[in-house]
Amino acid sequence: MPDKEIANRRFLHCASKRTDGTTLTGLPPDLIRKAGRRLEIVALTYAAAYPLAYGSFRIADVGGGPGGAFPQGPDLLAAAFIVASLAFYLFARSGLVSDARLLDVGLIYGVVAAAGIDTHLLWGRWPEAYGITGISWVAVWIVFFPLIVPSTTGKVLLASLIAATTTPAYYALGQAMGASPLGNMTPMYVANYMCVAIAVVGSRVVFSMGTDLGKALQMGSYQLVEKLGAGGMGEVWKADHDMLARPAAIKLLSTSSGSSPGGTSPEQQRLEREVQATAQLRSPHTVEVYDYGLAEDGRFYYVMELLEGLDLEELVERHGPLPPERVVHVLEQVCHSLAEAHAQGLVHRDIKPANIFLCRYGRDLDFVKVLDFGLVKRAGELSRGDPKLTEAGGFAGTPAYGSPESAEGGDAEADPRSDLYSLGCVAYWLLTGQTVFEASSPMLMLVQHLHTEPEPPSSIAELDVPQELDELIMACLRKNPADRPASADEVSRRLRGIEFATPWSSDRAGRWWGDAPSGATTRATA
Image 1 (cartoon, rainbow, N blue to C red):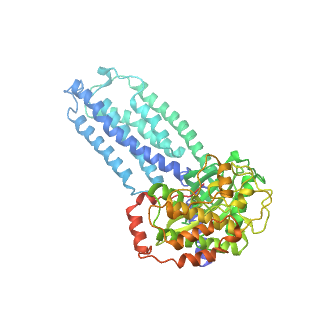
Image 2: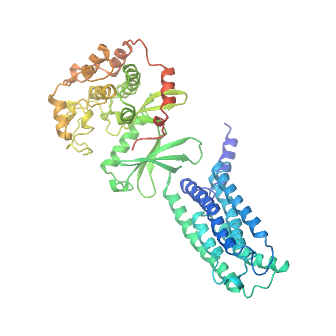
């Protein structure tokens, strides 16, 4: 793309943003979207409440106000305001305009709604006879509405002034059309305009809080949009890049984890290690990392691709064990990721269903992404000095999927065949819906990995497990690393050699994803 065109696009983008990095309204997108949803509720509530309030007066006095003016006018106008409010509700729900633009249109609706309230109070129902004095419901609406629909000070001031002016405008119109004098309406007018000042101040407070939140949700060139999940380490958010249309997921370290600018907390070291390790890998089955850094408040974050799907733990919990042919399809892709990592001397050390994501990826279905390289180490590197990131003492990983040598702890060297043991545990889970061992505590789980021989998955699985797959999984679960397959490439080769009468295909994957929409949720792990 020519430099001039890039510069023009950059200028146009910056022109649509405020200098503080937020959107045109100065509010973060998530807050704008929520304000739009509240606006829908307000419009629907107004449309429902108006006929109740107006009808009660009409039932009490069918003949109209004592002035005798416009006896049918109120009814027709009341119906018009009800229809207008319902029409605006449908418009807000339609998605025809952006959320930010909807808030601007909402201010116009607020003025129209204020005129509707005045129609109910004044048109044919004169205050002198009915004792309407002091603050009217229009004044309440003027104060209330900007808190629901936050906007800039100038827009709120203009909309509130017009809304406040509907009361004297109705009075002047009534007098021009020959209505009886209404007495001194000055207190009501003054109350309306005093409430304009209150509305502007209140709106400014809400708007300032929103812009402060927008700054807090700015991570480098990314704006946080929606929280996708949370865990002990922190949160995962959907995010938009300031310049690119591509969405992303941001993993954000929680402030309670002890990170600070230039800090070296164990959790921050873990995330930095994850970013640096993952950035070296190019397998399409390894999650892609875009960026990382420190937020203004000192929290560490990193940016990765946004995936649409669910992890293998959630997959089995929702839909039950997988057929063997699909398990083979999944495991081959995991092996592709691990083979590259192992070739570069990296050992993942936390292979488990929750760290393997099954997703829609472009036009591909059942596409695997391996996540969370936060415990990665160089092959042969001693595990001594690991941050204590698990419940089981110094064990690094997840007890249900940890290898025997990892369970021993101490000065055990990181070995790629530890990942293959964990991969065997994952395969066991996919086929049976159970972990290899069950225990009441993480420590007892690790003891079983060290000393207990597992039952073959074929003896537990509901579906028939091919002998070759059964034997391969049991080989991966050998206590001695030397007795396991030598590499992820070897595991992949043996998987490809397993034959099925009905292999897993793209057509079968398409039918599954079409029949199981609940499994197709945009998500990332925390």
